[in-house]
Image 1 (tube, rainbow, N blue to C red):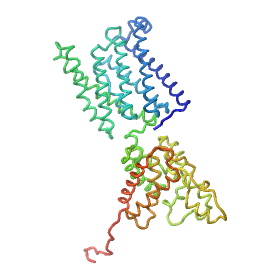
Image 2: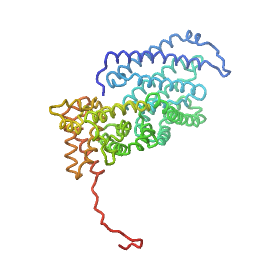
Image 3: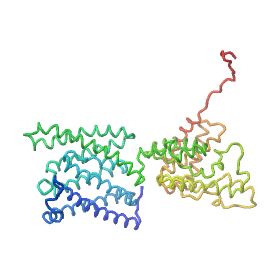
Image 4: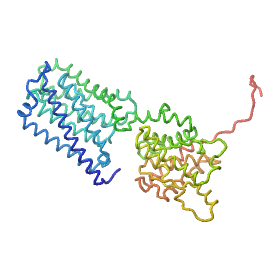
Length: 496
């Protein structure tokens, strides 16, 4: 978690919020323009005349939305500085708000105020923000749409299409049903699950709209009941459909790592994974096991297990440049026998940066590239360092035989560092008993702690102990012992 912003990050984040505010006002101007279009496609009054007639309301909306955005900035400044440090995330949040406002405005005018996709934004926010952050921004959206509807889109003014009761009903729907949607969607891992969420959200949405409108239309409620139920359900269905349609666009534009995107990236049909499997099968199999370890460890300490699994798949893709130079892809002959230790070290350690370059070239998430360059930290390549010591007369600078770093900056990168080394080292054990595996993994973790490999990430000693135990349990399961089969040769009739 980022704890401090640089002056440059503060300046960029403030500037981005100001630009987002100006664009928000332009979108509201567009919405007013749409509202002033009558059935014949003509304007009864111009936008300028509307603004002159409703100057006080326009000022109220401008000031209110400015205050809401200031509060939003203050919230992120104290609760999640990482959002402000990545200005593309701010753009993403408000881009989703613009789309939600526009869709709600269009459907509210041309279909029904009750049918507006009010839940699209909270569902989208749940995909790329923490739960608490998503709820807070959803509350901001609820107030923005309420303020706009009451002052610039009310049936009391020219072009307005939202009755007062509908404004309050939408406020409650976004607050209450939107929050439920955020909680539900955080547990959904499949696109079919999104359809289930749409069905579940229909119930509270229908109840809120019926209760809110019951007292207002009590005389005609029998006639309106079916209409309210139908349009409330349409709100939920349209929200989920829009969410599912636009989510891939957000994933591509802002490199979002949703559960759906992560599963696509870890599919064997992915181009980079397919190349790794064909050209570096040993590295591919190693990555599969490391991914299994990373997923279990991340889940054990409360990190995103699917993100850890996906990042582990790609941590060694840099070996595709020279796959035959790595032990897991060699048959019997070691090509390093023909090279000097210095040249071997250059080839081995280059796979970290080569992996990051390859990941960026294929437009994969930046997080994967970070893990690729960090999973060896600044550790020495001991095999070739020892070989060089034997060939030299004096002491050597260990830094010349070490990875260039940086060291892990996230818990997931630290987990993958441990999992990667533990899996490779365990393969070399002649006897993989639980005791020997535990001793080996413990020594690997202890060595990295002593070499300050975890100094730049906030992983704790307790979490390292949990990771150690998890790795031991998983590796013991992967490399479990088997009974020795009897040496019998059976004939076709089953006789030996």
